[in-house]
Length: 106
Image (cartoon, one colour):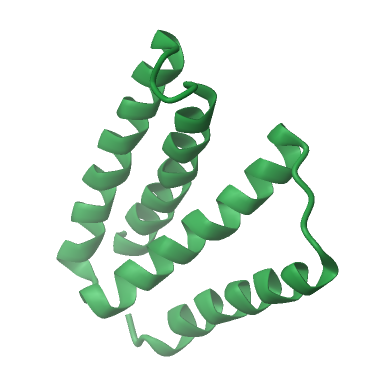
């Protein structure tokens, strides 16, 4: 269950980061409110995940999910572009996340 909590925390990190950008520096109330809600969900599930997983596993996986998710959100929602070389590093990041999961023993 800790891995599910960690996945939810990572997705919620993408949620709050995306809506934080949409808030215009917390000047748009609805996006500011939704962003803060995402932060609470994110950290709540991260706390739950770290109760069942070592910090040395949970934190880098959470960060990686958020990083990859934020890149995808930027591309899909904000029409951001990344180079082919950047895509290579995104793929390596995903491989790293999966490698940590598969070798963690949890």
